[in-house]
Length: 329
Image 1 (cartoon, one colour):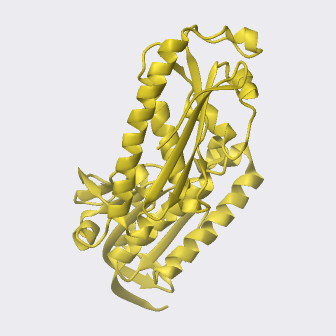
Image 2 (cartoon, rainbow, N blue to C red):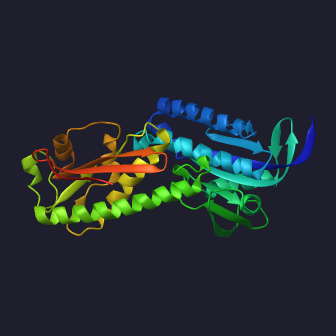
Image 3 (cartoon, one colour):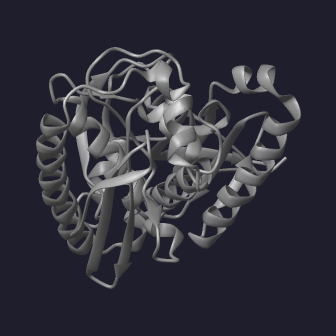
């Protein structure tokens, strides 16, 4: 039996809500888990890491540096978020990740000690689809990683005598936007363009709806009854760039537009969970109207070319399929 001590960066991951997924569909869950594990193993090896163990829905890996571990985790979450966007919401498999750097014992290929235990505790503190890192890791990567982390205090964790300084990634969208590219300035500029576009679109839709007046009763459209007044469904914007990485920009615009429009008084806005069932499809707006009980449907597309972005949007009266308003930004 060989045994030695060493310093290593430890990544601990597991699936959030794994029991629920298995209860819902065992075969589909196992197939997704197998596919996602292959992705994780590939990213770990790419960053010169090693998968130590993968029991059940969990995974433990080690890296020669804290920065490699963090960059690997960001790429993993970005890639898995992309894959999850293609699944029904209740079938999405979200991993929590914790990363710590510390002294560990390597014995017959396995890793043991507080360095490993702390990583597992950090994983439990992370939000599904996100990650937490220890203060030791943050000290190593603070000026080297484009990712932004926020301090959430010293946490008391099980079986660890001293509180652990914990940092978490600053927002799930930071991961989903793809820090893997490392081009933070470009992505911040694009995010600014998106916010400006959303403000203009929301203002235009507000004016259009004021002029339209109340919606036709939804029972006349053959759909479920909804509250009186203007009602709208924002369909997932289409990524026209041919680049899967831009899918997040398209989804982000859709989500932010839904949020912005929901703040307009007297306007009923259908939730994201209902409209994203049409992602990747080309539904007839009249069918969408009947399914969701809305009078108006908004759809659009996003096309990027280098640092150029074009957002096209149109508002349709689902009662007759006519275009009420369209613009390009």
